Amino acid sequence: MIHSILYVEDDYQLGDVVEAYLDANGYRVTHCKNAQQALQEAKHREFHCVVLDLTLPDEDGLVVLRKIKGLRQIPIIICSARSSVEDRVSGLEFGADDYLSKPFSSKELLLRIKKLIERWSFTQKQSDSFKVGKFTLDTSRKALIGSQPSENISLTIGEYVLLALLARKPGTVYSREQIIDSVSGVEGPESTRAVDICISRLRKKVEADPKKPAVIKTSVGFGYYLENRTPE
Image (cartoon, rainbow, N blue to C red; front, top):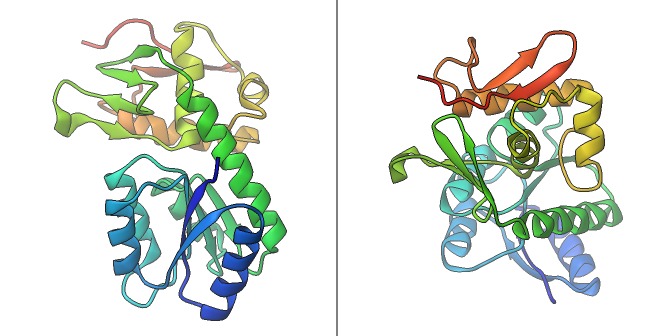
């Protein structure tokens, strides 16, 4: 199967080099040099992955990221010279699934694309649904489904696999280390700090009051678990 990549990069020289490298390794690449063109492509065509620069001539890449996530569920890798901790955190909070700082090697980007598509394909094979507070975790759409379409919430791959892990066994406490081990080779946080950040993002999406979580709860000194009762 040939995978399609939406590559958004306004640097012509870098873009042409990366496009040629990915093409030579069996990917079908659509190279867009601005936000408007990228959004048009995302609206009308199916892609397996998006590689997105943040510094674009007509719109900030974080805005483009949010808009693409609003259009469809698709893995997104940010490739940007904006490599501060704040930029990386913002990218992940806006829904990016990976972040690669410039300068980077085309070989590393290729590996990250391959792994991300594999992980996405893995999650696509899941077919169950689970209750998460007032939501249903739809494993075919990789999203939280509310009682009304306007209440539906999209998830990154990392958020999805962590939440699915907790949702499959509500009430079971998972330590941070167990979470890392359980999602290893699939997707998800790779450090205890990353687990905490992902849990914080999920709470903002599912909790009525993220500061007083009633759905994704903390077992002090142990880890996290999903409450098996629907909050009142």
